[in-house]
Amino acid sequence: MQSMEGSRVPQVTFRTRVNNEWSSISTDELFRGKTVVVFSLPGAFTPTCSSTHLPRYNELAPAFFANGVDAIACVSVNDPFVMSEWAKDQECGNIMLLPDGNGEFTEKMGMLVDKADLGFGKRSWRYSMLVRDGAIEKMFIEPHKPGDPFEVSDADTMLAYVNPRARKPDQVAILTRESCSFCAKAKQLLSELGYDYAEVPLDHKVRTRAVGAITGRGTVPQVFINGEHIGGWEELQRWAKKAA
Image (cartoon, rainbow, N blue to C red; front, side, top):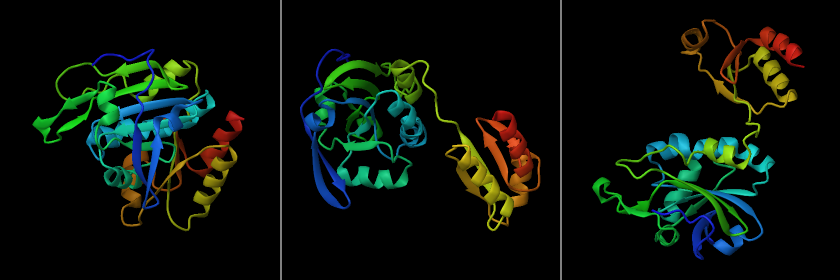
């Protein structure tokens, strides 16, 4: 598996499913006049691909877009139906999923490998690349070792190459319950502060135990920002005033 830095991307046409209809996109349409980040992985629905590789690119997409990247594409040697269903199962609204069903693009990239020992057949080796106007500027190829190494093709490594000083989106989560007025106030304040938060609504049967186990508190809301436990509504208000 050799780097293709300095070469142009292979000319192929991807067959995809969009709104339950067939659609086609050529590499010329995808890359011409654009800066595109591409990452390729062994298979849809597989553990590392679903839990880390794809979600992190989706999470960091705003930072990529703010630093001159026009699109982010995920390539996998899967058929269009599998990739379409995987998209429904994932948080990937910022990513274009490209099924390389026949492995044509992957083979021309020199990244087609035999994973028959896993029952996968021919699949893509894990890698990422930055493509400017169809020319491959940079590639991060996982080391050739047994298994499925995941060391350099991740989103953070690529973003650091695009711009080492790029500001990453804040990671914000809030534990809530239904019909909680303080939860509503906390969510409104987070929105006013410009945070794209993840809400974790808790069922009444587990709420007290869950909140207690996670935060040591017994009430909601409970807010977390970049790994820091901010606390409830009043603590969030105080934190917001200090951060202003």
